Length: 333
Image (cartoon, rainbow, N blue to C red; front, side, top):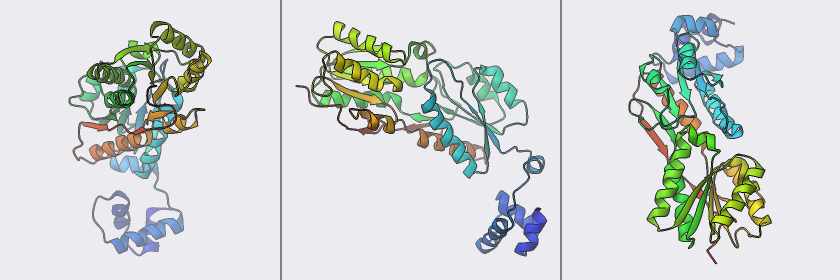
């Protein structure tokens, strides 16, 4: 099936069909509907190779997701699904790059005709890829914020505000000794942006309210959760509030505290920064700030489409945190 067949069936010229597909020139709504009806009826699909040759575009974007140690893959894949789904609505496919190749990997992809643009995840505060991203002749969007985001287009949950919101909630319930059980240690060693910002927000809010606070990185294993729970009770016997920013250990940590004699929320209130579905299915449903993976992934693609279309896009898009109160927090006894 060719574009000329669609044109004949719709009673228009081939160039009009091309304009309807590309949006390069305006056509009447009635003509567009007639063309779309013919495309559906005939089962026409544009030939990707021919389209790329004609437009010098591949209609493919790269999603760069290095699956490093300490990354929680299920949450990362939620972002990826959102990116792929939104890209398809814009008639783009997604090339997923998961290797830890840094600047060399980006340059290898950008120097070919494989992709038109890039979305980059797992952004570090001092990311070695930033200079190249600023210099590329292909647009890019970062899911995450480096320390110096100038000249880049970035979108993410406001993780600093998320840390603050969790502390504000606990402080409002009267808790005075709190702890953050955070991401695996290697995530902090890499200076991954979102983890560092949670710590910053947690600490700032605790200081603002005059709370006693501490931060404890934790491997994403039940045994590590048990060790951290024991350490917290040993070092901070007056502890009554915990913020968890480590998805795999949310439930194991609650189990560990209860095995050590603390009831949630009777003796200990727990909040988390994690996907809503995880927080809701825990044995004790957890008060949490949602990770809006669908909204962030969709927003990243929409920003990229603006840039590909020659429009300006805001440099910084921070999504405000949304706290949902569930059964794991209560007023301090």
